[in-house]
Each structure stands twice: as C-alpha cells, then as structure tokens.
Image 1: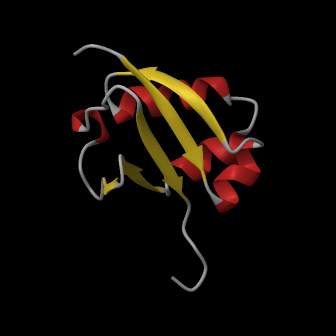
Image 2: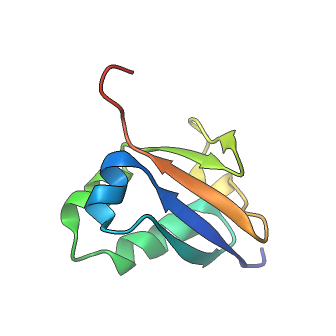
Image 3: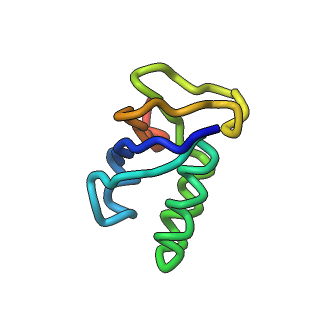
Amino acid sequence: MAEVTGTIRYWAAAKAEAGIAEEPYRAATLAEALAQVRQRHADRPGFVRLLDICSYLVDSEPVGGRDRAEVRLAEGGTVEVLPPFAGG
C-alpha cells in the first residue's frame, strides 16, 4: 500500500492532551497514522492512552469497530480524532 499525506485533527480532550489542533500524517492506513502519532507524542502519555478510547472519522466516515490496519487513507484526506464526550 502506498503512503499518502493528509491531516489529522484533534477535538475536545484529544486536542487539549495533544497540545495542538491538527498535524499532518504520511501513512497508508489509519493504524500507521496512529502509530506515528503515538511516537511523535510519546512525551504525552495521557494523550497516547486517550487515543485507545477515541472514535475516528476518516474522510467524514465513522471507522467504528473496523480494524484500524484495514482502514486505508486517501491522498489529501482527513482523520478526525473524537474522544468520548460526557453525556453522549
């Protein structure tokens, strides 16, 4: 699978824990992009742990329970990182 570039956006608690609103990725799958994020933010263990319980949208489509390694990313795409929300 070929790597592509895109943007990963963090919302609510994920944004606060990451300390940034968004950053670029270069990966072929969602699993690869998340592995890069974990490496890049290894100095923020709270954020790294939070990634395990977040929901993800890839180009506006919910990932749900699909294997992250099977979710291919498109060139110029967007990954939204949505932490659990209180009350919802």
